[in-house]
Image (tube, rainbow, N blue to C red; front, side):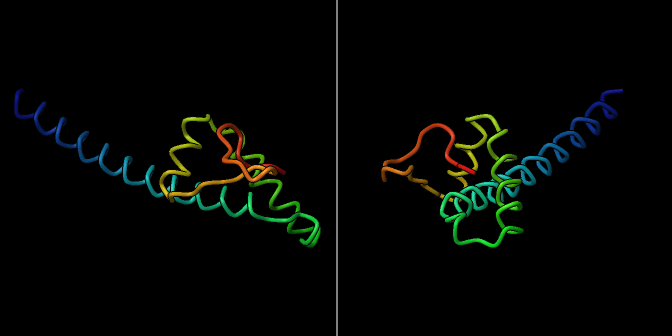
Length: 94
C-alpha cells in the first residue's frame, strides 16, 4: 500500500512539474503578445490585423491582474501608458 502511494505521489509530482513548465511557457507567450499589442498603432494596421489584435487584447485583458503581471515579468516586459508612464493595471488597450 505504501509503495502504491509513493508511486502515485511520484506521478503527481511529475505531472505538476509538467504543468508548471507549460504554465511558464504560456506566461511567456502571453507576456510577449501583451507587449506586442501594447506597442501597436492600430491606425497603421490593416483592418484584418486590427480585428486580430483586438481579439488578442480582449483575451489578455480577461486575465487576472496577477496572471498578467506574471506574464509580463516572464518576458521582462514593461508597457507604458499613453502618457509614457508605466502602467500597473490593465496594460493592453484595444
